[in-house]
Amino acid sequence: MFRRPTPAIVAGLFTTALAVGATGWITTNEALLDAGLLGTVATVPLLYWVMITHTHQLNDEQLAEAHEAGYRAALHHVARGLLTPPPAPPTPGCRQASEQSAGNVVCLHCRPTHIAEEKRAVP
Image (cartoon, rainbow, N blue to C red; front, side, top):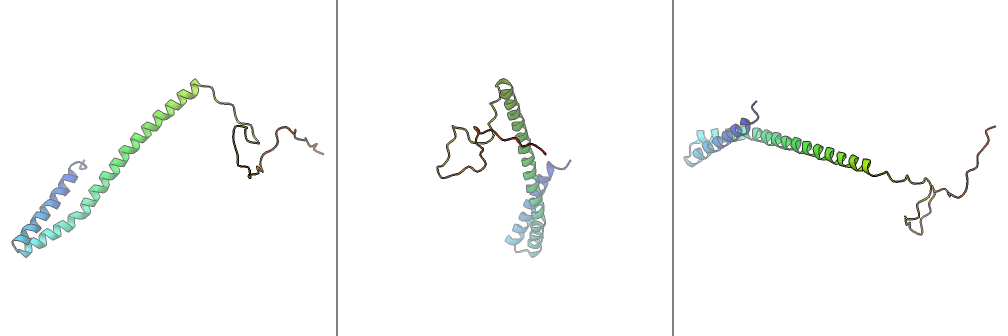
C-alpha cells in the first residue's frame, strides 16, 4: 500500500532536513543546524532501505523476464527436437574416428571394440 509514495516521502524528508541544516548553517543558528543534522542522519537509513527495496524489485522483474525467456527457449528446443530426429547415440568405449587426441595421451578407459568380451560361467 505504501510502496509507491514511500520513496517520495523519504526523499522529501531528507531534502527538508538538508534545507533546515543549511539554513541554520547560513544564519549561524545552532538550533536549526542541529535539527537539520539530526534529521539528515535520521533519514539516511530510510534512504538505504528505499534503495535496497528498489533494487530487489528490479531483480524480481529481471528474474521474471529471464524465466519467460527460458520458457520460450525450452519451447523452441522442444519444437526443434520434435521436428528433427535425434542423433545416433555414441558407442561406449573408445573415441570416434572424427575426434582427434594428443599423441602422448593414453586412453585408460577405452575398450577395443573389435575384441568380443569373454563370458564367464557362474559355478
